[in-house]
Image (cartoon, rainbow, N blue to C red; front, side, top):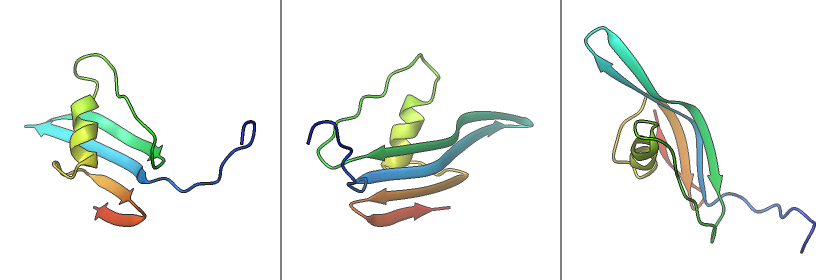
Length: 82
């Protein structure tokens, strides 16, 4: 329905994704409290300059990396809490 917002829950949802890399005493924040919601059937493109956290975001959403803090939902099932 054009002009009306559809109240459909997100198929993939991430709340407060945070990833910090450490090297000795140096901490580099790759992602800081990122929130994301993608509805079923939607497409998402991630763009940005080198080193901006694109691969880190995709790896966290796919469960391929650990993060400081996250809550992720896929198909209304929670799969990652740290």
